[in-house]
Structures are given as structure tokens and as C-alpha cells.
Amino acid sequence: MSLADWIARLLTTAALLGGFPPATSAPPVQKMTQAALATMVCGGPCPVLGAYMPGAGIFLSDGLDLDASPEDRSVLLHELVHYLQDLNRRYADEERCDRYRDRELQAYAVQDKYLDRYNLAISDQQYTLDWQPPGCAPGATIPIGDDRNVPER
Ligand SMILES: [Zn+2]
Image (cartoon, rainbow, N blue to C red; front, side, top):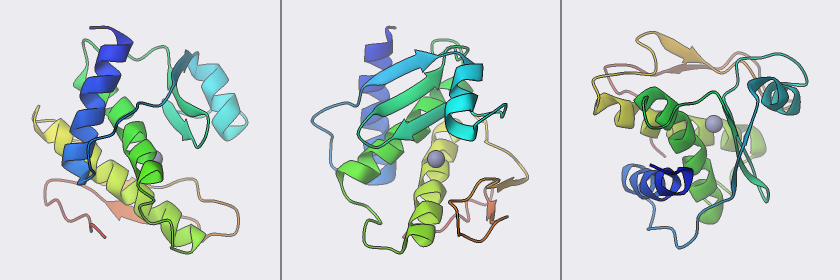
């Protein structure tokens, strides 16, 4: 399936699982090497595989195999949730540290629900947000796992 087909299909999935109205347009999605993506997002080597930049769209590591791997598809799905959050102004009125945390919580929750269809999970342990916006409390730990105890706000 083409990248455009995956974007359309996963955008529908992201809207359903995230409780958003169907999106009428898709964001631009650009593939790049993992090293270039890491430099863009982290300023150096880091394990990032996808990023959403408001106004610019989604950037994906070209190492992802969307056809073969549900886990790789879930990376695109996660970023599409961020696109839908922007489009629908979800959490837009929150203070920026809360907004960042809640956006990530929802994106990971949707990603986890998607992987659950394949009997996969992001992690059986806890997912730790290892990056926070400047000025926000570091080390927020987000529990994601089989108990599905991620708060939805
Ligand atoms: Zn995210």
C-alpha cells in the first residue's frame, strides 16, 4: 500500500480511536533518515522515529516499514493523533506543560489501542517521557500497559 493510502487509512483510525470527527484533509508526511530526524528533533542522536510539527506536518524515519509492521504503522498513527489534536484544538486551552503531557498521553493511548488489535503493546512496563518542553517538570512517567489506565481528558 502506498504511503498516501496508509496516511488516509490511519487518519481514519486515529479519528475513531481518539474520538475526533473525521478529518477532511491529511497533513503532509515527509520521510527522512533516522539520523536527520534525530538531529531535527533532538539536536543529535536519539531513538525518535516520527515527529509532528504544527504547520509543517509529519516527519517519519525512512527505516519504518508500514506494510510489514504494525508497530511501525503505530508511529505514523501517533503523529496523526497530534495532527488531529491540532486540527480540533484538543487541550489547546491548557497551560503548555499540561497540554504537552495530555497530548502525549492521548497519542500513546491511541497507539496502544491500535497495537492491541495485533496483540502487541507499546511496552508492558511504563513509558517514560524523556523529553519535556523547556521549563516543564522532567521525568514524567506515563503508565501504559495491559491495564489501560491512561487517563483520557
Ligand atoms: Zn507524541
